[in-house]
Image (cartoon, rainbow, N blue to C red; front, side, top):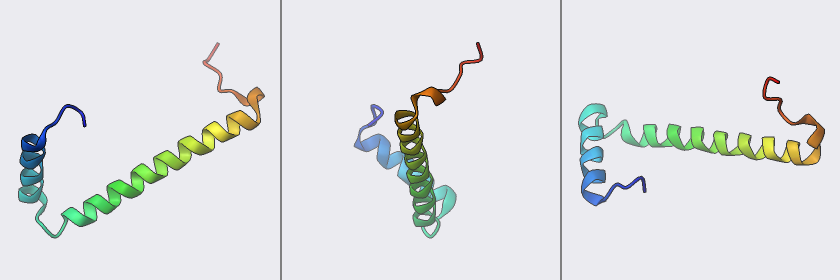
Length: 62
């Protein structure tokens, strides 16, 4: 994932725990998961709308 190995992931996790504290890490993970889920759902809704109505394609400004 992104060219990161286990040692790099461990260092990132350690820094996150030092900065935010162990109690905040699950809350941050939950918030990040909700944001990613919302982004994914929005992308699916956009593609479904475009597939249903190809005349509504987004203009590129020209």
